[in-house]
Length: 371
Ligand SMILES: Cc1cc2nc3c(=O)[nH]c(=O)nc-3n(C[C@H](O)[C@H](O)[C@H](O)COP(=O)(O)OP(=O)(O)OC[C@H]3O[C@@H](n4cnc5c(N)ncnc54)[C@H](O)[C@@H]3O)c2cc1C
Image (cartoon, rainbow, N blue to C red):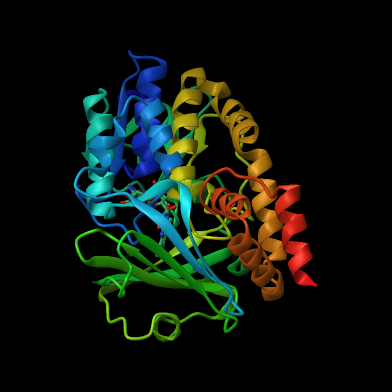
């Protein structure tokens, strides 16, 4: 049977980052990426890319300019809280909005240029042995990295349950003309109805915007309810190509087991519970998994520890913030505080889009506005 040092299941951002990191950590490593889709392929997403995601890829030797070429930076963010408090400010660093059909193919190209190979194959079954992992009875690997997204087959193969419905969001997105006056501004609007729920409009820079709406699966969301939510929050927007997808929130993450099978990105439930952002966590956890893969049968333990060191504190803080945000009044107070102080706004953005913390000054500023 054909043998590879590392097999990565899924060639999205997590998988491509894992392949890049595995080759950089040990350049002789033979890395095979398997994806059920042909690239370039679409992925249902808001297409918003946090600057920190580009930092991670830069650390893997990918020039961020090659990833965002043709898509202007988006420097400002406008937020509306459930009770209607509004704030618009510049972000500390601009975000980008690049359709995933473009972005993912560019990251994958970098992984292939780095020496990984790609095959089209839908993985169905893993068999774990002491010294190797068998994939679909067709090939073996020293380590398998499951970067196969929200419905991960690799995760299921490890016996790890999917997220509960109250820790799983579902969102629908399409493309529509920008809102009036939206050039260079990402818009996020929330509502008390069906809370926690939000809609977004992220401008691509060519007059179009990625627009969408999401809420928790436990609310019983149907496609009709999601479309209604989008229209309620972004009245007059009539998008093309509406498609839905699930988001496993980081408030219920599986424990990475010891051994030769690692999880990264959505497969590891690394989606921010406040915003639905997942690309930063996908490339970061992919990079950590790729580096850990070099240690063979210790890879699972090493990956778990590396994830904990790098993201543990942030994940605790974003879970706490998500718990607090269940009370819309607290969100209103936080948004009013962000409107009053740039520092609070920056903290809120870092917590929602990257690896920020719930800082004491921000908590205190929000509490003052509760009264
Ligand atoms: C509507 C919506 C809006 C979002 N908006 C944003 C946003 O604006 N910004 C942001 O940062 N995040 C956003 N997210 C989250 C983001 O899309 C994900 O977190 C991100 O795509 C995770 O990357 P990944 O590489 O883990 O998984 P994916 O991007 O899902 O890639 C998984 C890959 O695995 C392949 N695959 C799956 N199963 C198999 C199999 N059995 N065998 C072989 N291959 C397989 C798939 O074809 C795919 O290529 C959004 C999500 C949704 C649903």
